[in-house]
Image (cartoon, rainbow, N blue to C red; front, side):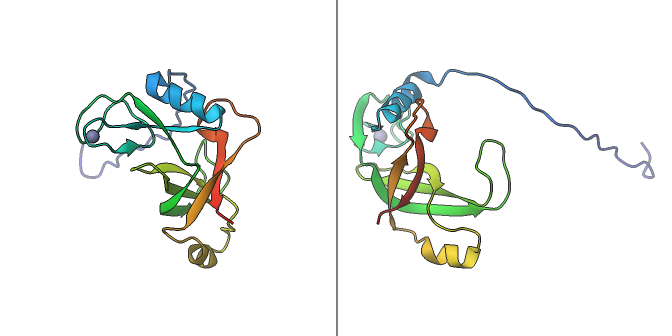
Length: 155
Ligand SMILES: [Zn+2]
């Protein structure tokens, strides 16, 4: 290749439908959500209650099997307002959050609802780290993370 030759860019698109097992831990978590229960796992060594539940404590490398139910309310840890469209996410704008549920030691990623997001300045004044949130459940639940429609500010 000489310096005069331009690098060729080939446009493409991958659209790969697939199925995979959720695994033992996520399956139990999702069965709980279908029953409107939010289940986490406690580490036998550090005693942290990990949300979302995972097979091992990432600090202690202990296998986890002590299921505990955590609260349906929690505290906002972080958020970002998205104005771009992504596959599998709501139409923009939407607000991705990390919420630390009562009784949990780590935060769950989900969506914030019932807060107007069109004007970013006013949205970021209304959304405050530390604000109290509660889960809003879907009427029709299928055993997945979307069984919680979103988290909303506690009235
Ligand atoms: Zn641990």
